Length: 468
Ligand SMILES: Cc1cc2nc3c(=O)[nH]c(=O)nc-3n(C[C@H](O)[C@H](O)[C@H](O)COP(=O)(O)OP(=O)(O)OC[C@H]3O[C@@H](n4cnc5c(N)ncnc54)[C@H](O)[C@@H]3O)c2cc1C
Image (cartoon, rainbow, N blue to C red; front, side, top):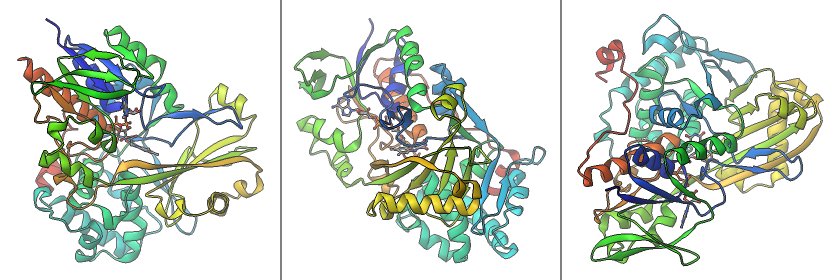
């Protein structure tokens, strides 16, 4: 008999749970309140240009093995571009190319790239090597509640190094400021992306809008696996009887029966949907203490091509990462020979309170100081999009607040980037949570199977040097 599973929420967590279960013979229905898939990783039509743009540029790293696996399963992996070269623009505007040595094993593969960073002194690079080594040796289980900013000071990291390196990498990766980052999460970024393997740091960027990535092809793949996909189908409540979830009731009153339910909605929306008998569960009550961080993206349409590189990381500026949309025939037509840029500002609390025009002007001036073509071009159109609940704040001690996927009700699973995955709130974290929820359901059905795929293999030298 096929188990009926209803998944509430069509973000990456819900979609990953769907593929994991449908591929193993479950009868899966995904109900999503909005008219599109992808949740927070979404696009919308800019009314002025008529172009489909993302709420914010999303990227994944090479160490995001489950997200990349999910994309392969959905046959959307060809819509991602692998970038093996980064450009860091120092405070003086000089560019430092960042790429791995092809012949040095991890963790030495990025050593020449770090040496080439023009905006760090030799002393700072030496302190950085020492800091990275100390961080890799931290036991994540014993991090306590010390903020990462305090750890950096305790490990004699100079202020300029903190501002130009640690801040730059972590704010982009974790969407939080250093005083609000748990040490274990900071460690995870550097270990998984930089130290463990040769390709963990590589950046995977969608070739087009997120709407293309999580659009028709994704739906086609899920439907071909027998998944019943329902958009504009918000869930009003879960139906519970005799200590088990019996299904869900949609906002239009329609009931859907289920043997298992996966609640894959954001944490602040999950709490009101939880059955009454779970509301006093001490573990689940901690969900209410979770906090979120905002991310802003500044969208700029210029009348000509202004950026000489596809993307760049900006050091010691309000603008953190700039992306030029890859030129496709459709884009070139829509932008009439111009260029569309997106500037990402993570943990954007400060800019969020300022007038938009002022922030846009500052961003354009920062870009023009680096690339004079920006100052010579005409800015045809601009806008800022801020997602206030973009990512879970990985505050010190956050892991104790994140619930596991399995709730006290055997046939009710939670999923979402905010549940306990060991990963920060990212597309990888979301996919992992969905796979973990699916694994729990299979276990209840007496068919235990591993769905989460392995991390990248640890190089022999990283094992030797850091005991990873
Ligand atoms: C601006 C921004 C930039 C980001 N950048 C990156 C990045 O570069 N790299 C990266 O890896 N991650 C990034 N993220 C994070 C990433 O988008 C999320 O971690 C991930 O998409 C979360 O997926 P999820 O499925 O857990 O949750 P969500 O995407 O929030 O999905 C939950 C879904 O549940 C639906 N829902 C809610 N209530 C109901 C209901 N009652 N009934 C039915 N459906 C309901 C919602 O509509 C939503 O579609 C970014 C996020 C934002 C906002």
